Length: 167
Image 1 (cartoon, one colour):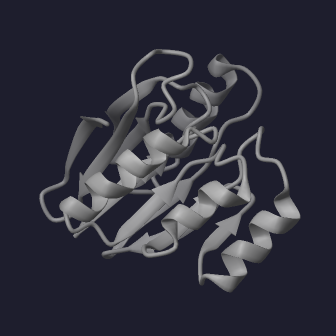
Image 2 (spheres, rainbow, N blue to C red):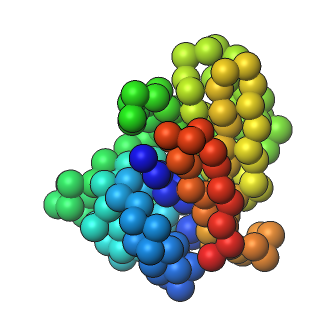
């Protein structure tokens, strides 16, 4: 089972279209968005996927985002969002305050031992690491606004591998 991971798209439509195209090419059916989608027109680009997303600190038009999600069978909630996919326990979150605070809280989730995968965004920085039995993943920023690099990730649940992809 392949999962597409994306975060911090910040309405960069060309980057989102590239990500969506890449996910389709790889036959990825499940996409997890880790916050800062921003506008309803961006969310609509994900309607052909089984989609789970969380709000970030910059998401606007939350009422309309929720309506579009509801109309398109998209899960979009305030984080953290707990999921079980492919028999694995996930927690999805965006971030809280500073980068340091976000990383500390992510590490705390991992140290709890309750989750196989802890997925987050907010920092715009790639992060793939393991703490005990938990894998932590931040796919970086898909918008490329802060780092100049537009990335997503592909998580292969069968192999337990994470691939970072420049889009």
